Structure formats: structure tokens, C-alpha cells
Length: 478
Image (cartoon, rainbow, N blue to C red; front, side, top):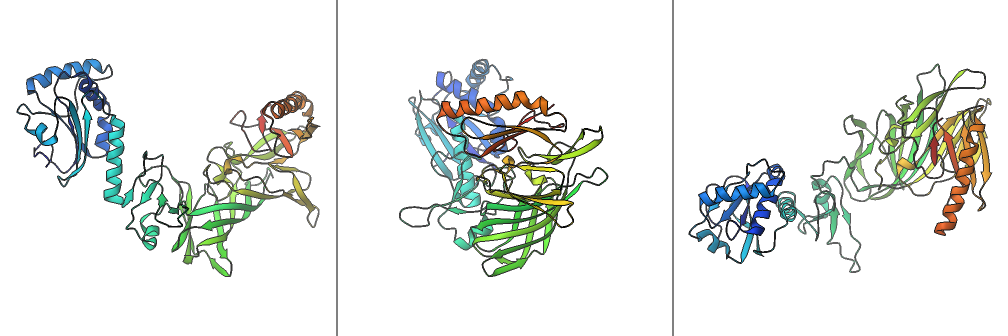
């Protein structure tokens, strides 16, 4: 039975903290801690009430001690204290001089959870909030929460009564089954739906980006570049007609999806400028399993030192030139190509750059193939596939470069690229890089896993340096 009281039962969910008496050392610390979480309870639309066996006057005096114990307190206790001098409520809650209690009551006035504690064991207020979050998700979203669950940190579990067909409709962030030795499919995960981070649906899993980019370094142009991409992926749940990718300052011209004999053209693109996403719509459901999302798109080499951006430099004849390079960390790969631009969404990258024949094109991996295109003005540079990695680790640079190179004692090729006529300024960096790489190999006993390491001096670069996988491992500003 839950005690009836007008200050408790409104249209709110309520948390009742019952303490054995005022002037109790542990209870004093609990109230001080509770006061700090007033905003957290308010955001959850939860009313907090304290029940104590002393009088209203005693409560008022006791709160002075609570405020004094909490040095950050403004002196105004944010919750009502119910005076239970006759111990009527305490008896219903089974609270004695040796115990305290926490009860969570729904807006329907039904008891949802009851916890008894020894009076000398302080309650963890964050744990109470966690319980409130869990109960709210279960009642409103048909979700369960696993052991040690934390909102925004761990996935939720689908309640057992949610069918496979309903799961895709109810949980747009995606559902992932857990492989179990029994082979049963009763354990299904989905991200916490209340988390405000812009995470893309987890049912769309990128595996390999195979892209061709046409950088544009013509100083008399609008610096627009073109690209095409085949994104090899896996779709994990049925009845999906839309794919959401990160995209910023890109325009997708065409898109199609292929899976075996299945093929369909996209019918529309919906951009969200605030969330930096594009929703690609198809006229029919996409099949579960592996497939390829093909897109053609255009973008711009901006001058904001983010994404696939442009920089100015002076060549050997003192002429102003333009180079382009990338800064994708942390959320700017989406300025270069449509993708799942989240660190955990690791994939393999196969990159091809089509550039002016006299320019140098660099990426994370060594060149696999170089072809001069008909007419001799352009060349196509195909790079080896990268390791499986996050989007922000991908890197490109295109421009006129001088360079120095040297092999480490373990056989890794290290190169330092500089603007024309400035290669002498890279000698120190080359020497330090080779010695450092050998030192790390010997100290950790783990060889550098890639065939090369490039460093490039970028005239305009915002980060100072950035860790990139293999190519552009360190950028040095001169």
C-alpha cells in the first residue's frame, strides 16, 4: 500500500525518500546530495518527497545543518519534507529507526519499486536516477535495461513482446541481435532513444568505401570537386526504404542500391542542415544482408581548414598556387563524401584520385596504380586498400610538393613533403621521425604495421598536428 498525500500524488512520477529521523548523520548527507540533483529530477518530471518522523519545526532547523554540510548549497532546500510524527507512513513503508527506504511511485499512484536500506548506509542518488530512467524507458518505450545499465552509455534491450516486424518501426536507431550459444534470438539491443547525440541507425553497417574523387586546385575556379562512391554495406533489419548518412556541404546527384539481383534507384534526398545528414529514399524496401549503395556527388574545397579544404602557397617562381588537403577529425569526413561519420563505424577505404598530371596525390596507403588519362592533362592515382579504420583517419593531399625520404632500420619508408623549394626545412623532421619510429618498434616489440609514413607541411592547418593512419601521420606547419 502506498501512503496517500496531496503533496506526493500529482500527475508526476514520485520518489519518496524515507529517513528514520531528523539530525541523523547519514540522512543529513543524503539530503545534501539530493539537493544537488534537483535539476536532474525536474528534467525527468519526477517529484521528490522526504518523509521523516519529526515535526515541521524540527525539519526547518535540521535543514540549516543540511545547508551547512553542503558548501555549494544556496540555502533553499528544493523538496518538501513530510512530517510523520505518528509514524503512520513509516509503518506502511516498513521504516524503523534502523532502516531507510526509497520508493518510486508512478503517476498512476501505483508502486513501481521499493528499496529498504540500513539507516547507516547512505543511498547513491545517481543509482536512484538510473532506476528512474530504467522504469521510464520500460513503461514508455517497450524497452528493458540490462544489469549495470547507464543512460547514454549502454544499449537498451527490447522487451520480449516486441515482434521482429515491429522492431524496425518502433526503434529507428536500429536493432542488433546478440549471438548466443543457444541459438535463440531473445536478446536484442538498440541504442538509448533519449540520447541527444546524432547517431545514425545502427542497422546500416558500412564495410568498405570504394571512392573516386576529382579534386580541383584551379585558382580561377569555384573549387568544386566531384566524386562517386560504392559503399559496400550490410542492412540488418527488414522493411527499410530509407538510408541516412552524414553529409555536410555536399549535393548528392544520383544514388542506387544493389544486392545480388536486386537493384533500385533512389527517389529523393532530404537534407538536415543542423544534423548534417541526408536521407536517401527508395521506392521499395531494401533486402536484408550485404549490398552496395552507389552515389554521385559534388562538394567544395572550402577555406575553413575543415573537410577537404584548400590552402594557398607560393611556388618557386613566386606565383600563388593552391593545394588541397584534408582535416576530418573529428566530424568532417562528411564534408568530403557521404558516410557514417562516427568513430565506431570502422570500414576499409579504397581511394582513387583523378588530378592534374603535374601534381602529387597522396593518401594513407601507397599507390597501387597510376594511369595517365587520354590527352595527357590528367592522371588517375589508385591507392591500396586501407586497414579497417574510422572515417576521421582517412586523409588526402594534392598539390606541388618537394620531398625527402629515408628508410628506417626496420625498412619503413618515411617521407617529408613540403611546398616547392622548402624541402631543406624537412630534414630535421625526417631524422626525428625515423629515429622515433625505430624507438617505438624496439621498445614495444610491435613493428609499425604499414608500409610507409608520410609527413606533409601544410601552409594552413588548424590542428597543429593530427594523428592519421600511415599517410599524413603528422602535419607540420611552416
